[in-house]
Image 1: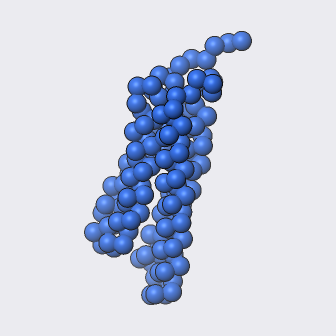
Image 2 (image 1 turned 60 degrees about the vertical axis):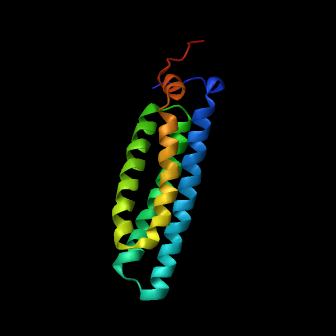
Image 3 (image 1 turned 45 degrees about the horizontal axis):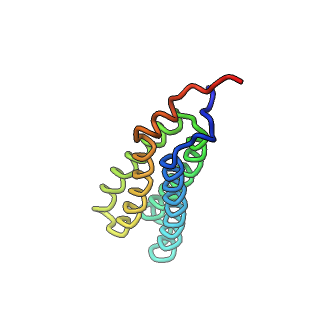
Length: 134
């Protein structure tokens, strides 16, 4: 698959990438914090520690997939959009059991906003354009 021209990248794609990276980095930090707090407060139980591992892994996936989508690969953009939606739904449910993870939900919403920006008409046109052969 050929990538679109990077010189014509819309600002919405740049902002989508920034949202994905910020959300990913904050999710990694919150996941690590949940792991550390879970170990020190209740021992290595499966609840908060396991959720912290999942949140940190998802944050890493946001950053990696966002970097691939930023290069113009529409497949990574679509996969990341699906991931952000699933993570937001997952954190809504987890937020009812462990209210402290509502903070992670707010951070995941930033990633969802990035996915919405990546599907705006200007961004969509850039992702679907066929590059000119030189």
